[in-house]
Image 1: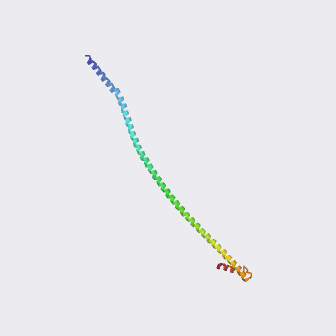
Image 2: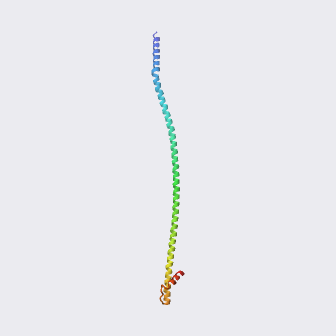
Length: 156
């Protein structure tokens, strides 16, 4: 019968086609699929590595930010201490300057007081001489009585 020959021919063509496909078509397709799977795996691995690197970089950035904040806090604390120290030194210097000025003013007042006392003594001596001259009604020789005036000055 003709059906058997057709079936046999179809089976032969099928097996030849299957062999040809397995021998020449299937290996390049499998190779392309394997390469594609490798690229996908590499891409996934790179994505995982990038994700891990990102987490590591975020941790590193957070640590650097924390250290920068601590450094800024230490710097600010040091600056505040230095400002307090400078302020205290300025106060001490101002106190010293005021003290020196006060002492200078007291010394100047003392000198002025001494000068005023000397001038007053001289005026009193001159008044005493003038009064004595009027009382005695005679002229007093300044050279002869210079010693008397000196003694009078020292007694006043």
